[in-house]
Image (cartoon, rainbow, N blue to C red; front, side, top):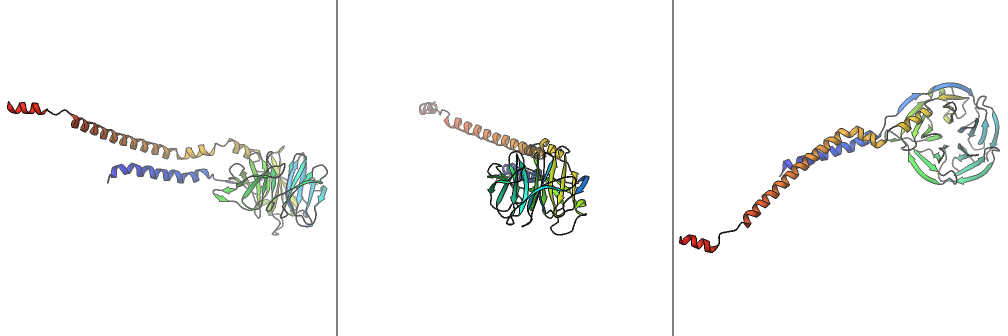
Length: 332
């Protein structure tokens, strides 16, 4: 057995295994947990079972849930007073909302219907159907991004609600379920996680959670009822801040937790492939060197073999003395 010949192959195989094992570690960025910065607090209707929150052109829109209590309303962001509202049929359970142009799109929980409201009159002007449950909704300027209580985000066409793609949300390789109310800001999708006092920032290209915002200090001042959970995120671009509240909360809070700065960090971050290469380049360099040296050794062996073959062939084909010369030599 040629033990020396198999050694380089073994080394290369081991290096490839190391590289393969390094890929997940390089791809899974460590998420950061930060506490939000409270700017101000305002009144909120404690009867509002908040499902969606959206700021548009200085007006705050809110959807409230529960059968027989669901509504779409415009709310004064400072006083919490309801300016106008449209109540839904008792058979519908309102969920997340988002603004698309001159309309507001609202999901329903188990009814499989998305309602489209005229933003001026708050009257229903169209509807779309979909499969499964509806939880949170936001608009990134191109697609509607929808959650359904799982770890999956669905990207839909805003014109006809057609499903175009889906994305699994993960944190360090683990799926993050119970995604609820959503807010799209640049390349980031902010999401409430049902039953949690945290808001997560999701990279909408990779699905990876890059930031977790701890809002537990705000939840401490609210009811400890099972359903009174943190829910509702509205981005205010002029202030680079967010209005957040919860179901049946008495307060709504203007806070900061990175906002567009977090989005800018995402956009300025280096490509994933480059990040992986940077983390494993020493292993790659060693692998290339081993392969090169192994190739040189193999080439040397082949050349040596060819030289031996040529020499042997020349020896076999060299002219032999003729019989006549041999006989003449014998007579002499």
